[in-house]
Image 1 (cartoon, helix red, strand yellow):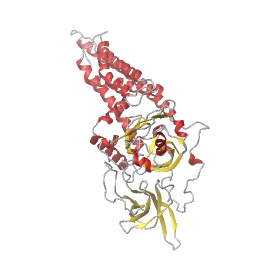
Image 2 (cartoon, rainbow, N blue to C red; image 1 turned 60 degrees about the vertical axis):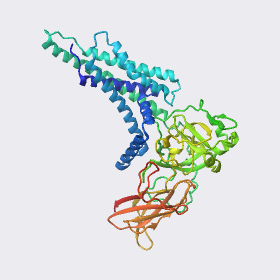
Image 3 (cartoon, rainbow, N blue to C red; image 1 turned 135 degrees about the vertical axis):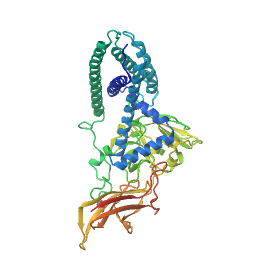
Length: 537
């Protein structure tokens, strides 16, 4: 028996696994069925030790920010998805490399080994698909059955290919037959490659098209963002941002997204309910329409990720709309022993916040709209929370339950070693050195505008200062902020001098507390240090 070896097995394993991945992706796009590579990746990320996760996040953010290869949250998600797909492809390749040399298939007897191989990988994959926190809507039984079937077909296909490549050769026929075997195998492998490539390309392309359509721009007649037809509250501010400063209100499409999912959960508004229970007098289940019936609360908010490096882009500002959480809880009533609120998301993420904070700060809100539009799927539809002065890691999206409890417990990221409080660090950033916008001062000096943002959570910014070439700190002009919880746009008009110059910025919080100048990494409490930019002028 002339059997294919490791390399041929690896090649066939890769080809068949690529077709499997594309088929799973198409089924996900068409019917919301599980896309196993992403679910396995998400499950792994939830079970790995905290230090490993923190190291991975720190490294990924540092590489993206250091190499400036794109918007951090988008590049990071793409990297995660690539690793998920690549990991599954590697497993399939190794499976082919292992199976081909050791098994001895015979004509018509490849079915049993294929079923065994499919079950060996399909059972754990089906368990993950059925138990993951993001149900497809078809139910865990259908999810698990589909995944199991897909892997069994994968195993049968792989062992059938092996049986076709294992051609009997007698000793007397060996010289001539060996060449015939090589030619026959080559032709068969070309056909296999063509078939699997067709399935892979067609499945991936059609799946991508359907996925893009599901998040396409709103149809004609759909509501527009609030900001498109309304002036910002500080529209009359006297300080004009330097050319090149980021938009004061972040476009929704550009607002960062960081969460624990390779694909954001898809929540049906029709089936969704906010369950409120635990130590409450009247447990309730509220629809989105019932939450929207409360008097709406509108707030301009700057939100940042705790993984944002100094000068990073994991920060954004928009107009939040929702209902004060304290008002909802007052209506339901809390029992005397309730001290904290456990906020749970549909993806398994959770956080625990003190009820004293909710009672004393009416700005803590359950938000269902950004910039006048319902929350986008990737930003937490149908409901997320806003807690002033805290990083995004403390603020769940896709919320489906609130439970009043009698004691604190560490939330999702706190369990993994991140800061218990996660209070926003004061930060200031240089966005632009506007060399194409020179200003001739009244005294004849040529000025160049340097500009950016400064932010200190809900604590406000009292002052921003700029140093050029490590010289004295000079005050920058501050534009009136949109609210007490948004960043401040600053501008410094610098007397131009040709040559290479280094610009450094620092800020002081509303009460005069200086920004922390000492450098520290993003984990576990958020990065500190001063933003510094060098330019040849």
